[in-house]
Amino acid sequence: MEWYLLVLKRYAEFNGRSRRKEYWMFTLYNIVIFLVLYVAGFVTLLRSSIYMLFFGLAFIYALAVLVPNLAVGVRRLHDIDKSGWFILISLIPAVGGLILLVLLALDGTPGDNRYGPSPKAVGQGQAATSIG
View 1 (cartoon, rainbow, N blue to C red):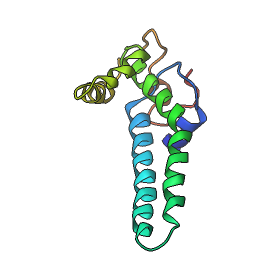
View 2: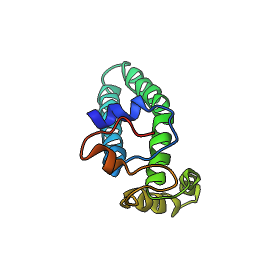
View 3: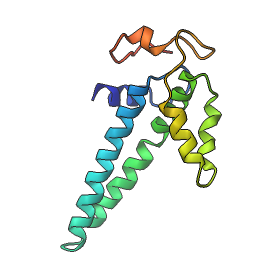
């Protein structure tokens, strides 16, 4: 949970680097939250009109985590020494998302790069809050 909260604390911080663990834990929590909201919406769809509440909450949550999701994606790309603009590669139909997935799964460059110090060196296995 600390990795998820770390991304939310660095809400709109597009500078610096983020570890794979930070990115993927944030993504995992987002998927779980979306699944819970959508399953609750579909379960209540057949029984009552409260289903709109769950779908509305899912939409509001998606808007709330849009900027942190972009920011952690850009910082993750910085960790492999790529420009944050590479996130736009996902707009290429069919293959763009797959290419971005591979880039986000790569190990970061060891040591410092042009985007800052290695988050692994700063954190040593813990969520590093002083990366900038």
